[in-house]
Length: 482
Image 1 (cartoon, helix red, strand yellow):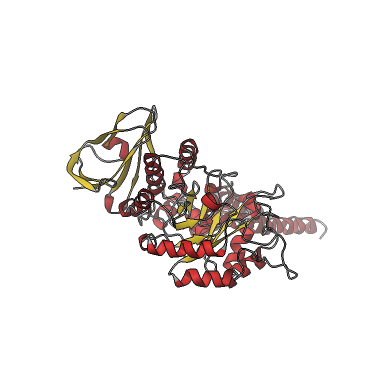
Image 2 (cartoon, rainbow, N blue to C red; image 1 turned 90 degrees about the horizontal axis):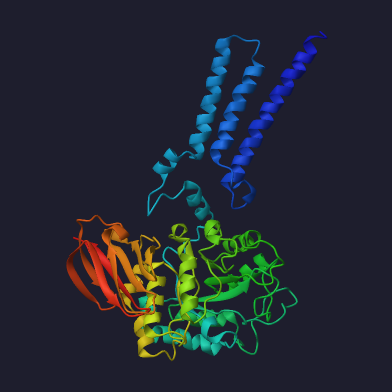
């Protein structure tokens, strides 16, 4: 009796260890699968968890059954292997399972990324958003009349018919303090009718209304409260007003990581009862392209743009490095358009609009569309360039060749077409060439080359496409294989 008791206790200990091990590993695996909620597990691969499970299951089964025949032990090991395989297949963690479950689009999308995107699945952002934002031109000088007149102009100029649908109010729309119930309050002196009435006005034009808040204690202007700690309340407020788009800034953030501050608003918007496009504006500070697909429909990859050539080009370059992370439902955002604000030349604005379109960036106009000149309207209204931005394939074009500020940018489109930009960023007139090898076409391929700014077509072009460009100018083509 005395000799049997320790053996029983040892077997009981091993059994408890086995159960604890399996439960712990499954818990960690679940945490990893939901790594947008439990980021500590996001760097540990599934294979580690499940291989670890199998090895220790086999080991503990061997310990538990050391008094049985070798055949029984082998059966236990086979059972352990079976359990391991079932867990592996159930979670589709091996690359072969991912290949079966996912389609390719300029490269394989991992099943984990697909799942994380589905966590946000609000049905919005299948193509990059198009519209207008008040900040670049008006900053804090906004009121409800301006917003109404901008909505009117969006329709009367034909921009709405081209897909520009969001009328987005940026910072400075609210009172400095919340009301006695803790609600955000529109500024009485500038938005006396309230946001619900303004949303109704915009909706009656067939457009959508966007608003601004901040994942901090105050907004960047420090003229109104932020939403940090008030996410559920503010999301319900926005939904009750009929808001369709939220730009969520990053000021006064108490040095808390955006990975912690932004997801609560994602959940709050999901619980608000209204589909609201969620635009993260954390300035690319913690590489949001790598984690924000489960959080927002777009994410800023850069600091604020200025109406200057150097600012625009640097934003294009910073955004380009994250090209592989963008796709339907979640887009890289190099900030709003400056076209028409007067700080760049027509050719520089043409390049700005072309690159933003190829890069599948949000096309949010930043000028005063009520008074824009004919050139600005022509640039912003180029239907063929817009179609590249809104292409259903949803692959962000990128820089594929660069030599002394002479660049080729390209990206795939639906129906095996390819969009190409020749961009002369130098200060001298230069000849630029995109060879088929630069843009992923076979050498023998013949294409029809559509010039999207001249609205003309070259037929049966083979091997390369070339042109002479003025300083800072670009050419944009869609190549259709014959």
